[in-house]
Structures are given as structure tokens and as C-alpha cells.
Length: 334
Image (cartoon, rainbow, N blue to C red; front, side, top):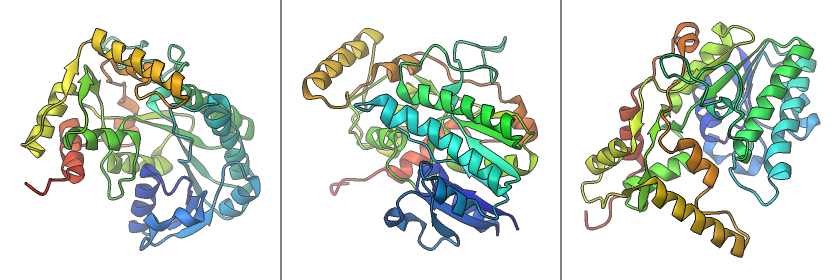
């Protein structure tokens, strides 16, 4: 039995990870920033502990006697009034704090969750796959991408300095799970299948079931090779047209969203930015999000994940189908 700490335990990935570790009989500490918002962990065999990445004392207490740290917690926002203060700085400072506290506590293994957003999607191998080496340099306007990139680089710097046994996990769009909170990804697929998404644009995504990410992370704690980055994405992709087709299968009454052209989607982005400027609120469409996904095919070099972690995800189509089926809300007339 391994004693482990999962930070961000009330989030989509963290919560499902705690559940699986508990099922496997590990001694799990579920680190949460707000103890009053831990209801999603009721009934799960774990110790719920206060754990704020910006509160070093809380980290020292939460990590005492821990063998494995699953560093999941992060600020997951694509917009803020003060992006540096609200998104970038907390991710950087939090990363430094938790890794230094892990070193002081004598943690044996760190599984650090980063993101595919840290990868340079224009750097591809001969098979057209996005390379695991290097970092995102072309999309640093988006504060989330910038924060995750800088935070992972900081993590490796601190790990090297402190001689930590660490691997990083880079998940793609996460769907599914026993626990499905409101996330941007889940909310988007819910809107599609429930007829609340008026439009899409041309995308080829690589959605991954949260259970497959959890399996890969747990495997990384025992078989992950120190110093490696592991992408946990799907081995298949799914297009906007295929997503709509599945939504129609789940909801036969669906009025399908229109797939907009590049010109049409950017016209809406212009409009959204103008409205946001006038109201000083978050734009309904974020230009950098559109730019990084429009017409891009999200396929990754996952050879090391397939080999070291035995990563065998369920297909992108099945991930989308099961997620939409669970999020579909039939009307009274149906």
C-alpha cells in the first residue's frame, strides 16, 4: 500500500484519480484548497486535507509521510482581467512551492500534470505527429498555454536542482469519468448534445477518457522513467462532423450546430472581442483558442507512453459517445 497525495482533488482529473487510487487500496490524501467544497469526495475512502499551493505550511502538513505526489492542481482559465496575476503567477509559484515541499518531505516519486498545451504543435515528425520534445513557442498569447508551459519548465528546473524523481503527464482534452464537474471541455460537449451550441468550426480533436489518464498516471508512479514527459492523448482523432453525427445518435431531436468557415468564425471572434471590451467581461470566443484548434490535427508522438505506461485508450469516438450519453438531458416532450 502506497501513501499518496493528490492535489486538486475536487477537480475533474484529481477527483477521478482519488477514486481509483482508493479502489486499488492505496492510502490516499485528497488535497483540496477549500474544505467546504469537498462534497464530491463523500463516500470515497480517502483523507481530505487542506492543501493550497500558495500556502507552504499547508503543503508541508499534507505531504508529511507521503511516498508519491500526484501534482494535479492548477489554475485552469483561458481569460482573466489580470492574466499574469490570476493565471500565470499562481501556476508558477504553486509549482515551485509544492516541489520544494515534496523534497523536504522526502517524497519518492512525483507525477506532475502538465498539458499538451505546452507542446509546439507546428513541430511534427515525419508521421505528422506533434513531437514531445521542446515547448510551445507559437501560442504564448493564450494565458493558460503560457502558464502551463512556464510552469512545466519551472518544474523541471526545480526537479533537477533538488534531484527529484519526477515525470510529467501531458493530457489532451479530458472527458468522461465517474465525477463530471463543470469544465470548459465537458460544458462544451454538453452544449452540443443538448442543442445549446449554435455553431462549431473545423477541428480534429484527440479527446481522452479521464479513466485512461488516471491509469497512465498510476502506471507512471511505478514504471515512469525519471525525467520523461508522457503524452496521454487518444491514438485516434475525431472531426467536428463526427462529433455532430454522434450527438445526433444520442439526441435524435437535435438541431445540429452549423460548421462555420474560417472567415465566419473569425468574424464572430471580432464581434465577441468588441462586446467584451465594452462590458469588460470575458469574451464569449477567445481568439487564441480558435487559432490553436482551427483546422489543426491533434495527433501526438506517444511511443513512450504506449511502451512505458502501456497506454491503450478507448477510441475518440467512444469517449465522445459515452460522455455525450451521460450529459444528455432529454426534454419533457421526449
